Image 1 (tube, rainbow, N blue to C red):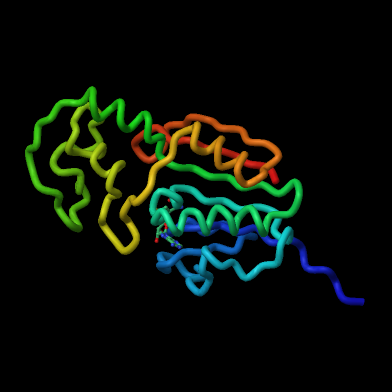
Image 2 (cartoon, helix red, strand yellow; image 1 turned 180 degrees about the horizontal axis):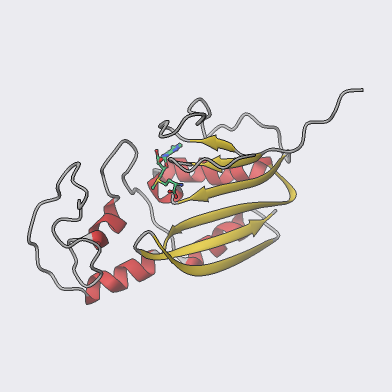
Length: 186
Ligand SMILES: C[S@@+](CC[C@H](N)C(=O)[O-])C[C@H]1O[C@@H](n2cnc3c(N)ncnc32)[C@H](O)[C@@H]1O
């Protein structure tokens, strides 16, 4: 008798963070066994066949056209009860921090330098340090550009538009700033 393959778990935009038991997908292989042959805008899985999708700090890297395709594909392949976990910078928080921060430009961005934050490091009270990378990406490698942004209200609207059954949104501090971590249930 043929065993039925378990529904896969997909890790979108994994970067160097390989998760055992998951299919780790990225446009760039930053670790061994990363699948670079899978196009997130055209997933090679049938409808309702995937158990879970994890996308941490990926969606803000997609173009407007790509973000529509990837969200739609994620909703299509997840099985009922399957989860889509998304983490993105909290754009409302980034904007509020930027407006409150000091406008002291001290240095150019240093490509390849460990402190590529334009002389201000991770200081959140300066506009041209890490805060500017939350708008534009840290630009230190292929794909490391931000092209879109998310608020809690946008995540909730996407969940409704794509017909998810439930969404939980948490605000956490990660990667030097406030992020939205949402779990959407199909
Ligand atoms: C900021 S990194 C996040 C990496 C990891 N998820 C983490 O949280 O540390 C964004 C990743 O998304 C990948 N990426 C960007 N656009 C992509 C696309 N269209 N398809 C697949 N991966 C993409 C980049 O190559 C990069 O590894």
